[in-house]
Image 1 (cartoon, rainbow, N blue to C red):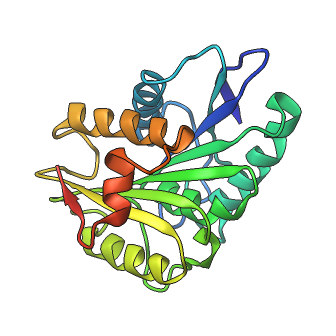
Image 2 (cartoon, one colour):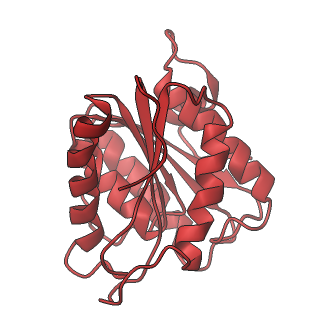
Length: 219
């Protein structure tokens, strides 16, 4: 875990998980495009929150590939380090592509309050039971040619059957790299993360709308 902001008395944490490859044991480096992309995402998330009480952090994987659940193992290790740094604070995980898959898998960790999965890579049969009792939002670009918006929609349907509170948002004309309509991607990140950390009663906002809609929301 690499810290970007660590106040003395944090009340919450946002942790980002970058993308990667299906397989590959090359060392993951901070200057790889997948990691650099998430710096902008973390900055967007932080823009809607008071930095004097929120930990901001990246997970840096040992390897670039998923291999045998390597990014998930690294994520659990980072979450295990967090209580020593910040105490038992609620965590929102933000993952892109392969990192989205890792974030959704790691939702079972007791400190994870919510998950934001951006253009996640979700192979057929990806488990959903770990999301029971959690809140998650999947955001996918309409024109993504790397990971599948259809697979994300199927995942959301199955997760709802497992009693997850989960919704899906589709960015019109959006691509996998989140470069097209980037400002909308970043505004969506800021809004959803703020709502995951500060849930309203009764539920309102973009997250609530996505989780209650029968079809993906189009932005």
